[in-house]
Each structure stands twice: as structure tokens, then as C-alpha cells.
Image (tube, rainbow, N blue to C red; front, side, top):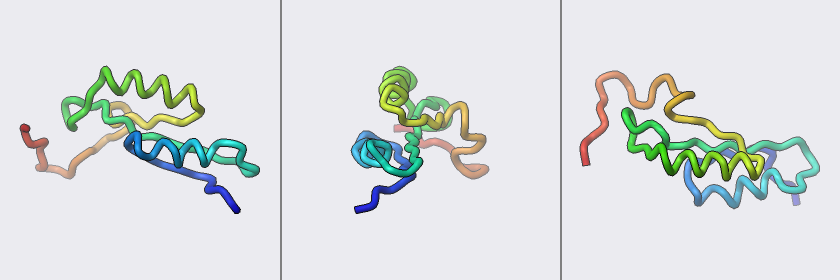
Length: 83
């Protein structure tokens, strides 16, 4: 059975697939997790994202920050709705 070589996720439910992708893979592989760390433009949680970042990086999973890596989250004119 062949393993995937790339995995992308944005929640803890995606973690198992990411670990499977990068664990004992005979091919060069990578996994990336998007962190909801932008409290201004999205419903982020910077404190939780900081903990998750450390955990993901420790497991060899790359991190994509909504706050630092996304130029745009929503298209122009769209605003975050208040809960």
C-alpha cells in the first residue's frame, strides 16, 4: 500500500492523516497544518495556536499561520460576523 506524500489540515481531526503521511514513508513526504491564530480577521485563538504550533513542529509537521502567512482571509468587503 502506498502512503500519501503530502497532507494538509486545519484541525486536530486531520492530525492522524498527517502523522501517517510523514511516518516511515519510503518517499520524501511533508505535512502542514493551518493554525487559526488571527484573532482580528478570523475566530482565532492565539494562546491555543501557540501550544498547537509547538506540538505540531515537535512531530515534524509544518505550520501555516493565518495571521502571518495569509495576506487575505476573506474577499474584499466580507467581515467577520460577531458571535
